[in-house]
Length: 410
Ligand code: SF4
Image (cartoon, helix red, strand yellow):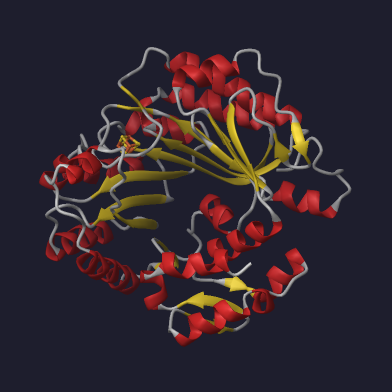
């Protein structure tokens, strides 16, 4: 993170980081908790919504002042269910970002919304507030599966939300899909993919279900009431997504993300290119590349810590200290920074560009991870092409196995 103790404005490294700063704004409220959800959420239309927005505005202002009103290229309002907030409160948050930071005129401003929580007038108000990209949590076009996931919307509501978003003027629309659900067959997933393609969004994310222990699905799994995931079927579903979306003109630019050319999510590209970002709000995470840090995950703790907060102290350049809303900080040694940069880059179709890595870190990736790269090539999991290391199709399926190797060879 650029900012107090992070170098002077004349420092080229400082300015490079400034240009790339992304803001993530977390809205924790949800109508119910979905059976697979492991996020920091507050269930119900909490009467503390207005108090939360005021605290967030304060956090946005404090960070903007501490960092000297730096440039921002992307804002992502996620959750939770941001569309549960009145559009006026979203506008208040975006205005606060523009006052506290120099938000580029062409900045990508994404907003997550759940079908069933938006109509055309709300969407129009969100568009007027400055949101220029909408990400709809569709998941699947199958009412029984949606119910099993604990989602409140129907497939019809998802179709309607897409239509309403278009009519409200959103010309950059993303649909989130999920596969590997309990009882889901390949044919059912294929039908959801086909429906999604027919709706012609600019961007699609297709994530495989993971069952975390602290979720309702995790509990059912422990009790033997849910069958463990069938990894072979999940792999087939991933391949079906890759093929269907590829044939429909979407380019897979990240393991689980597909876009029409020019509609890749710039905010998330910033994460995968290991650029600094600020996470604002309850449970939100930030990264300075040399450290990552996160806010309190409980609403009461976040709100009480925000009252009168003056901003973080810095233990070292770009390493904030725990205090105020910041509940934890992890300073990263150089080996970890380099490994994380490689791992994140490998998620992308563009891969790990060797020349860019050397220019950034003054070290050659092909020397640092000589053994790892040789083994990955021998196993058919990755290959070097046009100066970049990229995962193969098999490597994408076995990503975790590949990534661990970069952490082990230090
Ligand atoms: S809507 Fe999203 S954030 Fe909210 S409970 Fe469901 S999965 Fe979690």
